[in-house]
Image (tube, rainbow, N blue to C red; front, side):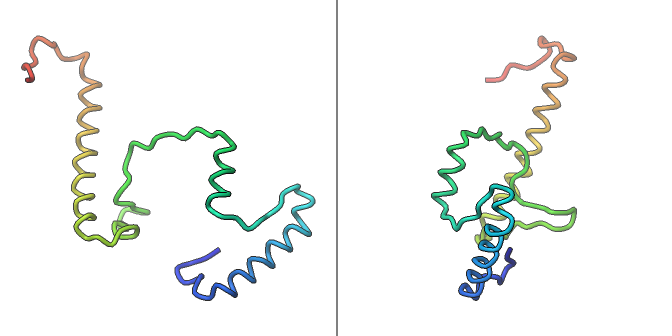
Length: 120
């Protein structure tokens, strides 16, 4: 459903989608006990909230997004060039510090705490 230019003819899109929804509800939905409806963001959010789901927190890479080793989508969600560069730099620093923290945490049993310098 949709590509970059799918929604240029909104009338055609909604007529086609409406036909698909009607066909599904009349032929498949009754058997599956599922009804497709037109919705709004608030209807969707209310339905998700009614499920009382719990969500995990994502701690690893967020930006820049990459779908393979050589394709970075740094500008896909933002048109601000300065922000994109800032995000790339900060993300590298964050990931490096996360790795250093993890390595240090793993090695704490190996280090004699009396040999560590005091941090002020």
